[in-house]
Every structure is written in structure tokens, then in C-alpha cells.
Image (tube, rainbow, N blue to C red):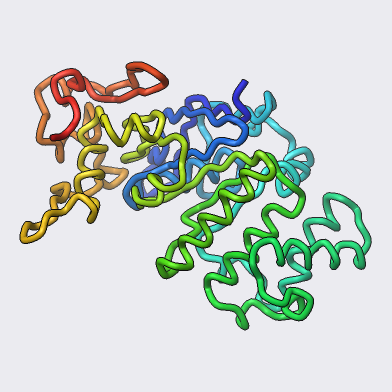
Length: 326
């Protein structure tokens, strides 16, 4: 049984003139010890999907209007607030995209890491401090005995991200949602953060949902991939299969636009057009206005995911004709 089984998740937001669907019928599964990459352009619904499944959305602006998020057989979307508070931090951790906006500038980093231990495991301040020092050491904070009393502004962006990771895994959760954890970090620090996440996975069996728009990160880190576009999953499957044999034009475009695919003296390929606004979503396949393979059936109705083989699925009517890019 999958550790996390998301089924037909749909989310709507309040907009002038009504409500618009930002996440539409999203489904995926994640097993223990698996790292799944959720990839797509900014605005495709990656972060909203993951915040919704753990119910970290402002209730006055967004609504979960359908679906289930089964975590170890329990539906997170149907849990009481009291039960959900126990799950958050203890069984599910989350690393946010911008640590500066999620670390309290008035609290020392040690107190922020220890807070989760005190709340969920009822340990005393002395034990919580000792464990916080050990956690900071595990995530690579130098001289943690001294730096435990530092404030977030005294750390670099990469160090603040390490503190966020320490707080997220303090209670040894079974699932970690990492929302673009390497954004705005230089390449060396990015590699260190990704290696740290994989080390934690190897040591504890942690399952990770890694939200990113960088296929290079996906290729070096993940076991499986789900590709999102305009609130829907376009393709999903094992990493090696999906990258070697993509079966959706959007996935092909993402792979083809990677710098590693470029040739000297030639312009790097790109996907023409831009992501549609929520109030201007096209009928049929949402990618068809930008698709070079579009045919009349693509514009008629939404295209459901079709399972091909080995857990590989695509939402493209013409996948048999298109094949993999040359």
C-alpha cells in the first residue's frame, strides 16, 4: 500500500466574478523511501496541490472541492483539526520555498528546531536543546553548540534552509514535502541540500515529494516524476522511463529546453506561448494552444491520464504517434 495516495484532488480559489479551479482532478501515489518530483512551470499548481493535501491553505481564499489524500490509510482531508495538528510535524514535515519568510526573526534557531520536539514529544527544554544541537549537526550547521543561539538573520540562505530541514525532520516524520528547497541557492549549496535530503531518506526511509521546475534536479534526485500543467497532471511515471521516453508534448518540451540538451552555436529550444490564466483555460487539453502536435480531437474535451506500462501514464491522445523526441 502506498504511504501517500492522492485521489482526484481539486482546489478552487475565490476570484473577482466567481471561483476558479487551480487544481483539477490530481492523482498520484508515493511509497515509503520514494522521492517523487512534482515538476512544471511556475503557476502550474504544484505548491497549491501539496499545501491542499496537508491542509495548509487559507480557508477564506481557497477550498478543497473534491478528492482524497490518504496518508497511511487515513484521509488527511477528512481529519479533525486536532488530529491534523498531531500529524503535522510528527508524521509529515514540510520545507517551504523561502526560509526567510517561515523562520521567526525574533526566535533563535535552536528554539525553533526544539519547538517541534517539545510540542509533539513532550520532552523538557534541556533534552530538546540537546536534540536540537544534534539535528543541527546532522544537517551540516557548523559549531552547532554555539550557533544554536544565533538568529536567522545571522545565517546565509543555505544555512537557513538547513535549519528549516532540521525543524521539519526533528520528529522523524514519514513524509517530507519539500517546496523548491534549492531556490535562490548557488549550485554548490543546491547540491549539498539535495544530498542532505537523500541522506535523510537513506537513513530513515523518509518519503519525499520534491516540488521543482528544474528537470536537472529531478534527474539527479527523484525516483518518479509527475508533470503538472495548468492544474492537471500531464504525465507521470518512473524517472528513467519518463525522461528517456516522454509521451506528452509538454514533457518533451521541458526536457528539450534544458541547457544540457543545447548544441553549440544553436538557440536553445523553448516552448512557445505561456501558461494560461485560470479564467482563460482552453477547452480540451489545456496544453493544446502551445502544442505542435495538436489535432481537432485535442480541443474537444479534457484528456484523462491513460496508463501505458510500468506505472507510466500520459494525458495525450496522440502518444502512440508522437513517441520520444529524437
